[in-house]
Length: 217
Ligand code: B16
Ligand code: MG
Image (cartoon, rainbow, N blue to C red):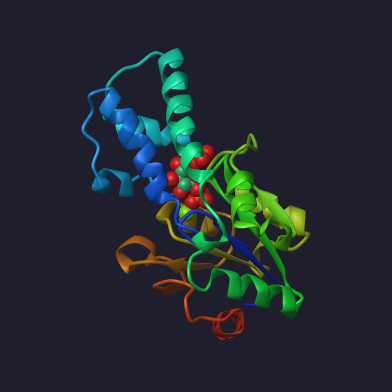
């Protein structure tokens, strides 16, 4: 497999916003009298805002208006926390690999389900490192559908098989495969074991080493 571009998921790959999403959803759940634990939050990884609310509600019926208001309320709590983020919130190894990809002259994009991805990238001060930014504000179907990754392959003008997806969520790896792209999964095998290569995190790993691995497949 010849890798010509890296498509990075944002939350859980370059930074860890899952704790901030958790705090936002937890506050909403408490206000609504719903039990919501850190374990429950794991199921929300990489999942869209609407689907996250459905999981949090655990079958409780709400009107469309109530659902919209709850998502806005949670997003307000989340944004207040994102405002406090800085480049110190990049995960170990993230800046190094993004800089290396630039040096190698390869392309790279952000492909995130989050509507807040541009704001998070601003806080991290890395937005200008990417050739394309595809986020959850596009009308495309969210992961595990392939749409967001296919939009990135079009934006970079590269065929899907040359685009390597870097993901921390099962839904994201499924979306990559549905798009016809290979995947590097970050995290435990129980979560991302279907990816062609699994690493605990980006720390201590180079783009060069990853490209060599995929060249051998
Ligand atoms: P928002 P990713 C995903 O981002 C998060 O992992 C997921 O927890 C969140 O619900 C989703 O974005 C939507 O986020 O509410 O900010 O639009 O992992 O695809 O970068
Ligand atoms: Mg993610």
